[in-house]
Amino acid sequence: MVIEPRIRNNTCLTSHPLGCEVNVRRQIETIRNADVPGVFKNVLILGASTGYGLAARIVAAFSGQAATLGVSYEKAENERSCGTSGWYNTQAFEEYAEKHNLPAFSINDDAFQDRTKEQAIELIRHSMGKIDLVVYSLAAPRRTDPVTGETYFSAIKPIGEDIETRTLDFLNPKIITRHVEAATPSEISNTVKVMGGEDWELWINALDKADLLARGVKTVAFSYLGSELTYPFYRHGTLGRAKEHLEATAKRLNAVLAARGGRAFTSINKAVVTRASAVIPGVPLYMAILYKIMKRKNLHEGCIEQMIRLFRDFLTVPEPRLDAEGRIRLDDLELRADVQDEVKQVWSRITSDNLTRLADVEGFRNEFYRFFGFNFPEVDYSHNIDLRFRHN
Image 1 (tube, rainbow, N blue to C red):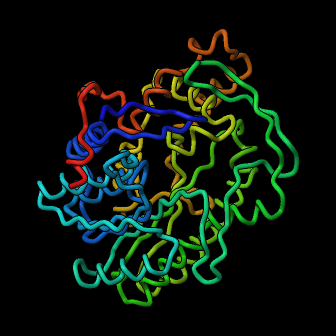
Image 2: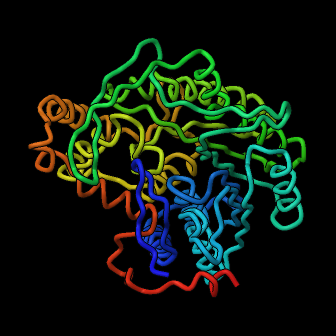
């Protein structure tokens, strides 16, 4: 079959295996040309198949020959339909790791469940060794509590009052207005249950109980702060409550890891195009404006460049420079005063008529397609992909 992008509500329903392979290869080439100390031996990445989690896995493996275990929950291809981009990314990573004699293990299951933790613990114990870095990069719309069995659904909404916001239809392109209702108390608490730090803490406690955390172990969870323009949906919304819980969890984990000489961090990262960011109201328009400005100032970074900085400047140094709240700040260039001043100026006067002149709509759209393996010039997308052959 010829695989083409099928998009519904700013979400792509198809992925291209050859394009995903190019995506992984390009990131590997980037890290192999970077100077990142290889201090980690055994790395666990929770949410390892796309975006920041995939980039962290690539940096850990190809900067210092670390053995990696990636946990993700992706749909496999079958004889009738293609798999998810994360499924193909993981396959590509494993193939390149094998070519470079790097130990790479993967678990495709729900990371929120006890069975997945148990499987990971057995694999680590028998095939790896004690873990010296745990990366927490899970992003999911729902989570089933492993103790109670209750399923919680996240809601990306403002808190306190309904909001009218402008966002970007990047396929047409034009600016559209969205009305978003304020979150209910249960939607707030449910979002914290799904996207907060509870599961991160369960993973660290399980590994600690199994005596599989190395001396000096580090763990980092990814977060986002964003501009004042996106505060209604991020820092002041349900996502912000979840991120506050994540940051509070880091402080609790520091107490747990202190006995092993370890540290827990949250890393506030830059805005990048992902499945989630493409559908959050207001965020695509903000990002298209941001990209235009940061590229002109030669400040723009993607996932792999961000993870190179994370490992090189923070995770592999004895005393990393943190903000007043004890957080790693990889959003420093995004939130630079001159950048944000320009973003706000453009935001105040952008319309559908001047959209493509004032914002990097094409760049946003291109990164969106590439997230799913499309729009890479190296790939002939008219080529027939025999999924039955691949499946067998």
